[in-house]
Amino acid sequence: MKNVGLVGLGFIGKTHLAAYNHIENARVKVICTKNKVTDEQTTGQCQASFVTEYDDLLRDQEIDIIDICLPTHLHEQYIIKAANAGKHIICEKPLTLTLDSASRIMAAVKRNNVHLFVAHVLRFWPEYKTIKSYSQSDKLKNIEIVHAKRLGQVPAWSSWFQYPEKSGGALYDLHLHDIDFVYYLLGEVNSVYAVGNKNRYGAWDHVMTTLSFKNGGKAFVEASQRMPAGFPFTMSFRAQTSRSTLDFHVAAGENIENINESNKYFVYCSYQDKAHIETDDSDPFQNELSYFVNCVENNQDNDVIPLMDVLYTLKVLQAIEVSLKTGDKVRVMR
Image 1 (cartoon, rainbow, N blue to C red):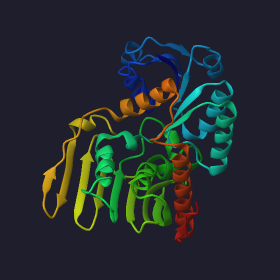
Image 2: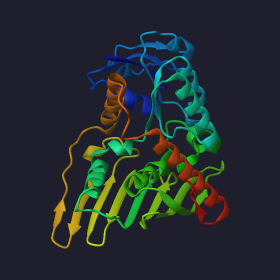
Image 3: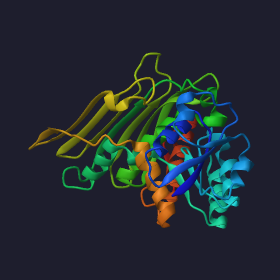
Image 4: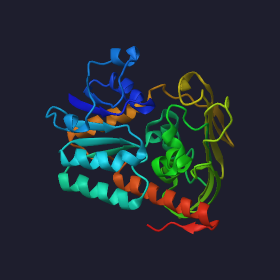
């Protein structure tokens, strides 16, 4: 059994808290939040104690893992303090907003010999796990073209998402998901070309990127946080080979709530076959956090989201940002 200190109790913090309630070898022992918690549903689903000071949480010798669910611009500071306290760390994506910041984080993690897990949750999402599995079989081998979309409004539960220096805008908060996953499928990127729009604070809130991969594949990826009110949070992914296509589409509520009850379409087509694909209804956050906890408990390597992949995805995002600013195609250097 691993004891978790959960830091932050916004939307994603509550999502993680709910997931831990279904993980047998982990329990949230302490929750660190500056805000007074009056939500009976939240307080009633765990036996955790509450603290307002992060240092108090870090001094708790029984805490094995710190789970950071804070605004992105705070990640580096909180990760490094946790690493220096000898705690293993789970951090919501994105890890951070610059490669220099990432380098400081990696140095602290290595220096203190602790595990760091970054929550690129699509790699644990049932439909996306199926896409990955198909890509490793004859059904979808040698993907040539990918189209991916992730469309919604700016998150309504907090204002920090709107500011580029705090969230990185839709580029880092939303586009990251599909950029990471197409890299997971197709490997290293040769070049990117991106266009987009900014919100009134200067954050890129609608981004469309064309990626060319070293294996010859192409991807067109779109992300938006500027859809009008009432537009359902929508994600889709279509992967094509010369002989087959896998097409996934889902429309949820304003965010990802009740997504398993949403309008969902998942079809595989080839010259010989057309079939609707059924996947399990497991919770991706439970899948993800359970895997991270097992890595700590068994001292095993994180093979699903190795830190080198996290760094590479960040490098691709930074190349996309350069392309957005300059209007040029940008090569991605390893």
